[in-house]
Amino acid sequence: MTRGGLLQQLIDSFCCLPGVGPKTAQRMAFHVLERDREGGKQLANVLAQAVERIGHCRRCRTLSEDQLCALCANDQRNDSQLCIVESPADIFAIEQATDYRGRYFVLGGRLSPLDGIGPAQIGLPQLADLLAENTVEELILATNPTVEGEATAQYISEMAAGQGVSATRIAHGVPLGGELEYIDGGTLAHAFMGRRKVNNGRNRHE
Image (cartoon, rainbow, N blue to C red; front, side, top):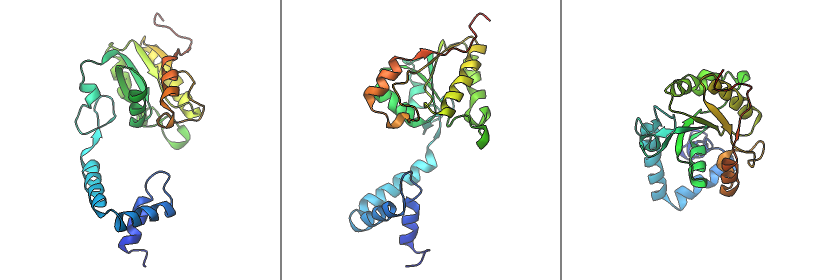
């Protein structure tokens, strides 16, 4: 078997998935070829379409086939609440675990100056434009409870205060260092309901 053969290329391709090493990728490749070729064709077809057609919502930046995602296009959502998350997967987790009915904004990461990730790279100029529309009354900071996530939440809370918007932080029923998409629904629901106001030393009247 040569490194450039189709089988090896298939194995190497599966390795692009998070948490999938060479051995797991090999099992996946063998399963598709030996047990489920029709499923493999379906996977390849849907994956190709998804990569080609799914982009980002122009308002909240989540993954979407349309310019506006289904949540942003839903006029029954509460415009006065805006929840800030790091990834589209976090929206799925919150929607499944809570009764939150407000809007979302997806950062697509978190501030990390050492990695060259600053405010522009996580869409903060676009977020500032949303806040300037004066419809948001509560900014809910649901970034992950990591060092970078906390720093990002603090930065955004100060930005919100400058525009007279109150910021709250979801409670830390979510463990430090955890990722929202992997937290069980009960813990996430408790943390979301217990969100607290962020103390940034400023208020609406300054």
